[in-house]
Length: 250
Ligand SMILES: C[S@@+](CC[C@H](N)C(=O)[O-])C[C@H]1O[C@@H](n2cnc3c(N)ncnc32)[C@H](O)[C@@H]1O
Image (tube, rainbow, N blue to C red; front, side, top):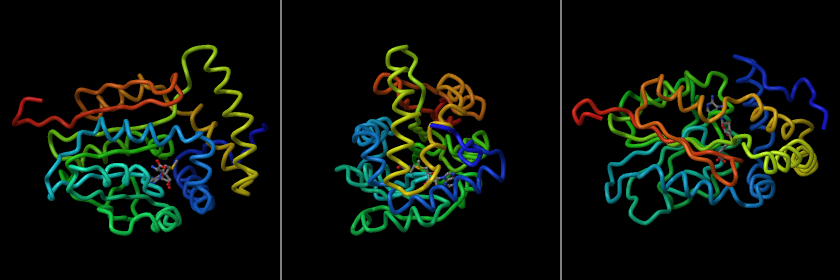
């Protein structure tokens, strides 16, 4: 499928505008396409990401940030867990995404906030954990986004990032490239009605640093115990990092 200029990931403020426009325009169809195009594997990935977060249990004061929360699937994965008694603050800068998902929130411990991941509207050392699913790749400035996550985490708290990657094995890679560059943009365009949003998606994955580099960038911004693992043959990866706690020698 041909890549049009508007589908190529832009830079800086243009990237921010591009990303906000895409998600605002596809918001009403986002959930449908998400589960359809991932053949529902995304649910399993989100479960694993929340497992790795190790959010505090039985603590009504626990506050967990879901940055780039979209229509809340990751937030809800945590909020519905038995044992979790805190609240999930779900932040995203595309209001239509938050609005599209709000029907799923009734009676849950999820609090939506419209905010920019590059300038999180929270005090330093606020959260007992933070998580981002398929959001970091879309940030106009990845390092700044990581710094913001670090800033708002409490010492000793964990960050979990779930993100697409390009599979390392040749067979899986061929299959993935065919699906991601041929099938996905076509189905995405037909179902969403958006001419290029689903061409942007594979382009943004191609444009994004690999997991080793992302892990190094997390370490550079201060995270410790930074590690990552592949999911489903390397289509996605989970990163984990901890903000050091000077009082506990981590
Ligand atoms: C692919 S969606 C992922 C949504 C959700 N986390 C999920 O797992 O389905 C990416 C989300 O990141 C949000 N996003 C991108 N850049 C952002 C920024 N700078 N600040 C806040 N949200 C941002 C978009 O608005 C979009 O909702």
